[in-house]
Length: 78
Image 1 (cartoon, helix red, strand yellow):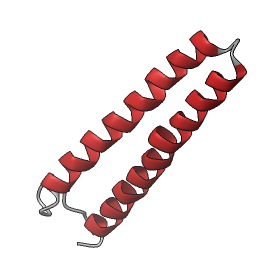
Image 2 (cartoon, one colour):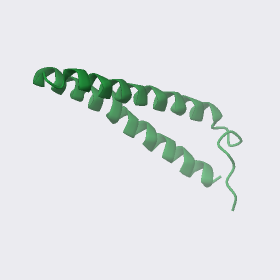
Image 3 (cartoon, helix red, strand yellow):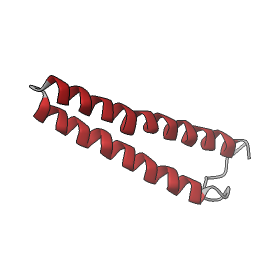
């Protein structure tokens, strides 16, 4: 059984949305990692930036990847 690409399965808009979300979350992680380098000597700021990376970057990133995988599984079943 061959699966249809997401675009053909009607999920093109959802896929574009997920791609946009992934990009945003990865930007938060990337910028946060750069910030960590600048605040590594300040334990409080370091902890604050690390918390921001986890809550605004990694947490949502995991959820978006899970949604993307769910979409891929649904498309395979079409």
